[in-house]
Length: 136
Length: 176
Image 1 (cartoon, rainbow over the protein chains, first blue to last red):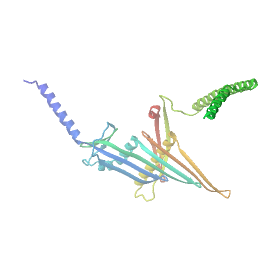
Image 2 (cartoon, rainbow over the protein chains, first blue to last red):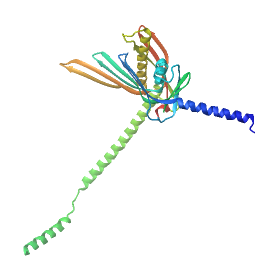
Image 3 (cartoon, one colour):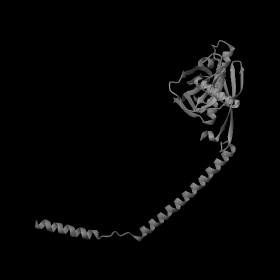
Image 4 (spheres, one colour):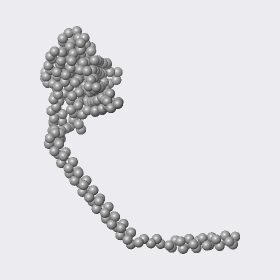
């Protein structure tokens, strides 16, 4: 006959396995790229591309961001609702800067392009929040 | 046949005598060459001395520059702070949108400023002069870099102009 403690640990283990597997099932990978152009100190164009990966990404999750989630599993909606936080996070990850300036007869024009190259992100959808982490 | 044999024999004998001829060089010329060689050696030694002196001066100047300017040394960090400016577009629908767009432009400007400080700027100039007058003067600058871990310290928005103060802490290991 098993002791009561033994049964308790078994059920706890089972519960943990179920929880972890359910978390793993909700995790998915997305490819995100971001680019914006600033011309003469005024924003000219901004584009954010999000798509689900068709192949599994290689890399370890780093620099996680937690966003509030009230709209199910649609990452685009979640990001648009928390855009400021997400853009800050993307900036922290690192952006490529391409700046060119031309001064002709004392008249200046400038163009700055900031780009996040297509990066794979692991996204964990939970009941009230979404965990986004870049794979590197 | 007989004559040809004789001719061949004559040629071979004459070549033998020719080979035994030695070129005589006067002693004065040898002495002169020796002197020139010594002169060249002395010049070479002098040049080596000059080079060593120049290297010393360069090293001393570099040390002085390092003392004057901040150089990122091993196991050290450097704090860089910049201010970026951005303007809201004319066709915004709300003040909030104007602020957000102006901030985006200001952040881009701050990133550009950081890249300029850390990596440097490529500058290209061109002047067109016609009939002794400057027709066109063009200066082109460009920056290409990758910046990560920059932090926004302060943001101000006044009369359509957004200013973002941004800082970055770089360490020697970031460049290895």
